[in-house]
Image (cartoon, rainbow, N blue to C red; front, side, top):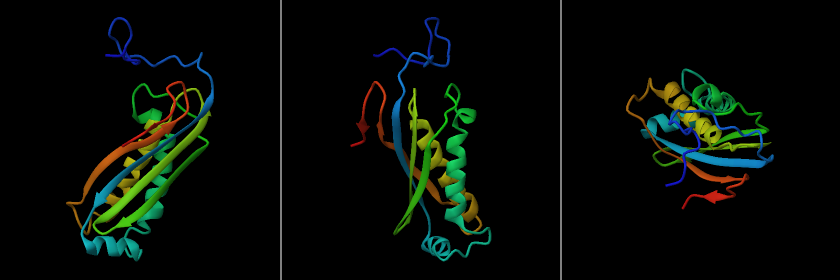
Amino acid sequence: MSKLTHIDGDGAAHMVDISAKNETVREAYAEGFISMNPDVLEAIKANSMKKGDVLATARIAGIMAAKKTSDLIPLCHPLALSKVAVDFEYQDDGIKVRAIARLTGKTGVEMEALTAASTALLTVYDMSKAMQKDMVISDIRLLSKSGGKSGDWTAE
């Protein structure tokens, strides 16, 4: 098993020192899904939810969350992100969310992309729960990452 980067020699959690790392362009893509009833999906498409434009609000929430990842996830470095985007794709039984995070820096942006996708999904839920409380958020995952010493990775 490889050495855990966030555990020191005594077994205590710590923030990884990235000061000696080289800056590279780093990018990560993440996705997730929220399933819902057809009437809820149609209301979102028609922009007829009482709380307002669900996807516009979810997009902004995802972007804001990516920028605050280090406040939410212990030991994450605060990052100066150069790009965060959140996009949506209607499916027959819900909405797929895809998020991208990018920067030129010394550490990866996987957690930022995952946080953006997760928060966008939570926002869709929050704005739609008056119509359906049993929506299911699922399949949140990293799709790919690039940059850094470990190089590129893509999910199968």
